[in-house]
Image (cartoon, rainbow, N blue to C red; front, side):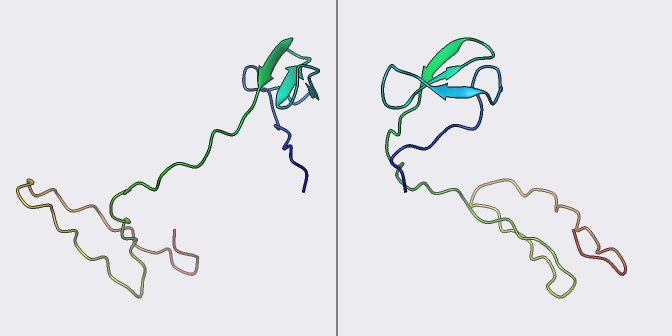
Length: 90
């Protein structure tokens, strides 16, 4: 594995014609918009609590109602999408 990953497109104009720049490691030039930019890896982020995983209903497992947090107002139940006949469920 190389130490350098190439970007797929210019972050300014979206063109894919990029060339490594002579400015150093991580520097790239876009020939379409004549911009130069530098990419660098800053580090890994600390894990965050992203909340509960949404429940998806399937034909074999009915959707379970979500329990509101203590003190929170009760929300209306979300509609359950029924599977299509003879096809794959959405």
